[in-house]
Image 1 (spheres, rainbow, N blue to C red):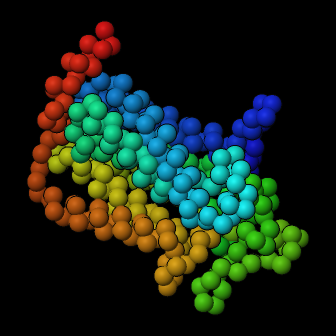
Image 2 (image 1 turned 180 degrees about the vertical axis):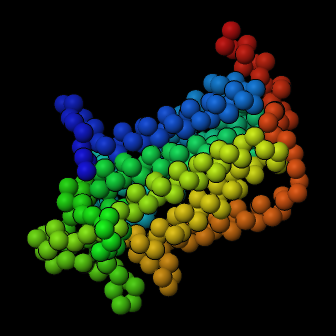
Image 3 (image 1 turned 180 degrees about the horizontal axis):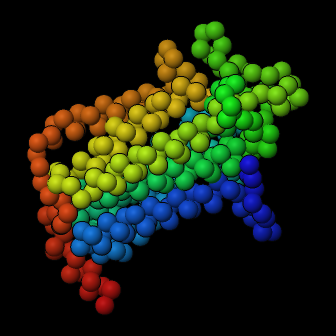
Length: 294
């Protein structure tokens, strides 16, 4: 674990921030390849990623703050200067909103845009979870005796009785150790590693679908189903409060993603349509885009 890579004067460069940046670069590359294949201006990918990055970071931080408001109010500077406290679901909502606004500006079909973004989201998530693993931002799992279980003594959020938790008799989170010394003997599920593996798998599946004939939006529907399923499974070993029986808040959101994705897939099933080219409205915009570059 390397939570902090180096310092540049007052600026601290975090490993999580580096992996987040790499995630955005990978997403840009994936979307750019799709733009070229679909005959769209490759600059569209950069516009999407920049808008999604800005809106995603804002949404991610806002979600984290609202989800744990008392903690942030006790130390307000952490709202901006903390190396942790980013929540994927907030980032996904903000990022998709940013992509939607860009698609409206360029007059490119939203379904086509979402299909290009779906694999990018998956690979971005995979790289982001590597950042969680390197920084130890609290995304680890419950205590485990599995051979690959590990501890996070250099975690950016601390490896203490307040952060090393287990499920109590009634599925509430309780300390898994009573002192700092005891915590060093605890091993937990490396949940970020699990998620990285699963999201790489989701990316491979979605990437393989891009050349098939399907209604616009189908790849994003599959992302909602598969990405939601991946998070739903990992949450069973994650250190997150259970809010509804054995389910965490993230699991409820993941379940909603899966239901929405499944319903969308069922309702569009059999409506084959080649989406390897442009959608209505794209043809009018592209000459303006080329003229602007000229």
